[in-house]
Image (cartoon, rainbow, N blue to C red; front, side, top):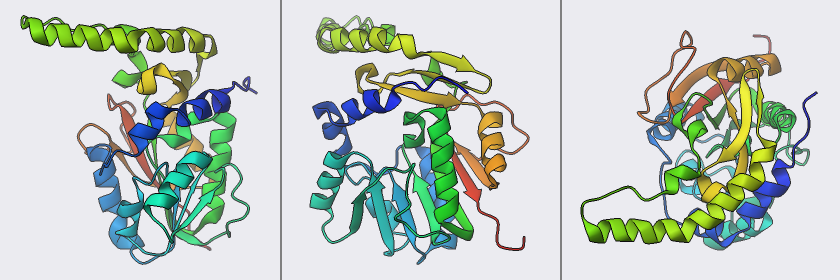
Length: 274
């Protein structure tokens, strides 16, 4: 078994930071074209059905999910973000809950169980599998699961603090502004990156590495297409579709590699007797 790294402590600290709160309360729609394509894929089939929204943060996905169905439950394991979401969307069923233990939610119930913005990448690999097993349990037979995950073969895996150095511009005002911005973020980003580098690991099919988001304040799992497909089928899912983040185009089953930043997986819990 792989060593359990302190991803929870590192990432929870970042989710409670001012930077994260500011990011999570910024009004947004889709994170990328792939998310829009994935939601378009599931909308008609899941319309009017019970929905479970995991990792709601401050509520970005709530309007997107409510467009599909008003039978809605949202959860997040960061209490301060759940309180933000409750303030923005009063009256909804929003719960402080860890996706690794959703025992308070019924089995075989939700027509769609979703975990957006690569949230599943923020826990150890064994915990990630536990989350997918819990998503399988709470989804009704024949229902869908939708989640996104970082690609180890994508450009995000190669990011380092050097990306924060100012890009040259012949315009002195523009280059000066870029330099000031770098001076503001580079010290903390460099500190975070160096502090987290000791947790970097490479395994067959996936790696654990510091991500550039939140000034290199999080450590996450980067997976590959074959490994994520293997994990899903080992749990019992059937894979309906995969979309790449960059262009929103479907990635077909015969594709073994991709340069997308991350993937959006849509998997189905088999119907009883299938």
